[in-house]
Length: 117
Length: 115
Image 1 (cartoon, each protein chain N blue to C red):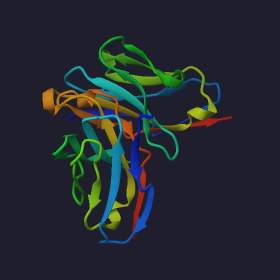
Image 2: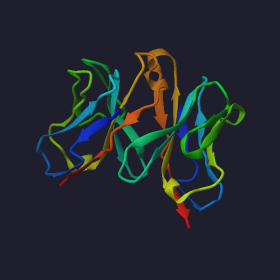
Image 3: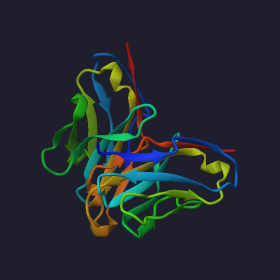
Image 4: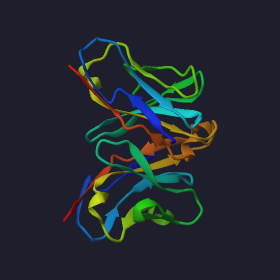
């Protein structure tokens, strides 16, 4: 079954304690992306990657890091989480090459709800 | 600046009634347009996509949307609402050229279906 898998689904942690949210897709997609979803603000893109070792900032990258060492995995790293990063996070992937990725449907994971105290 | 506007952050309909969720966009080039649905505690799923073929696009679960260039609109409709349609709906526009092409999201519309 084609899917995007995020872990963990829920996490409560404290300010400053480094955490990683994993994302894996089994569709051999080149393009992957991280979003955060906040009430009244919709979906905002954090980082995206067009291929292995190719990553770029989205609209709200501050406080986050990503890496793309393998095609299937795109972890989101919070080196020093703060309460304003409490949110619902989604990983997504889509087919398409460099110039056409945003024309393709995106496949989303089920989300990770992060609470940072 | 490019933008996507979903009119009405909350829409409530009765079961069996028409569903109409509005989406307007601003774009200087022909866009690609998407509607996604998010059920509670789930990620977003593609409902339908417009890619400059037919202006009336049929999607899953009985939804359809019509691209109206003159009105810069891509409203989502369903003739008869079902309880299972209660969800958050997002309109998105892909526009730009080459590697400047970008996906712009609306803020979403929460649909409630009353028995």
